[in-house]
Length: 267
Ligand code: T3D
Image (cartoon, rainbow, N blue to C red):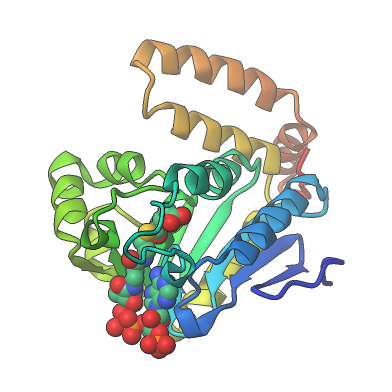
């Protein structure tokens, strides 16, 4: 099944409870122009409001995953007024990262090729990241005088530690998928030809699971990045209270006791 809207810069389909959002500007390694920003925003809104969607996959077409902002959209000719990049961040990148992080379902990323600038950090904002073995993660911002955005100055130190985050951000080194896996930046590096299928199969499997419970796990793990143990214990108590009131909890326990497969509805 497709969603109703037609897009020019992304593909967006719904299969078996899983929305698949594919960046589709392969000639510029799926970098973001203004129209693509608007389309991704609309797609994420649709994912949030459509009750049939219980997991999301983000990936890219062609040899790149995403090369961040389309730099040909920025007029930096001598004598021109400096662009206000903060406005672009506020309007485009921050809402996208906030949406991905707040979606009450698993967001699985298939990094099919190079992920640079904001493209790298969009991947790191997702809940589970698979990357093709040939893919590279590049904090390319430093090469053009910028700082990592799209949450990179938060996700990177939290996943790989300050020392690596600092060096990767200042040097702009290319990190292979296998090294990214080793340093805890991503979940798994997989063979190139399997990356999309692996991510989609994982998402479809998760779309059959207790969606509300998975969303609560997401909230708890995210909160652990800033909470003390005491705060986290309180949060676990509160979220478990909510989880314990879901239909899926009843179904999970009933199925276990009856030695049958559970049928979760996501509520
Ligand atoms: O402005 C704001 O709103 C603020 C927010 C900023 C967020 C950001 O993401 S800033 C960072 C922007 N991204 C970059 O600086 C990365 C630029 N790209 C690269 O460094 C390289 O392309 C890669 C390392 C990603 C890949 O290198 P390579 O050698 O595999 O490919 P290539 O030949 O450089 O790129 C292939 C084509 O894609 C090429 O076009 P052509 O020559 O075939 O017509 C290249 O120009 C185009 N391309 C790649 N990245 C971008 C791009 N075109 C526009 N913008 C890009 N970001």
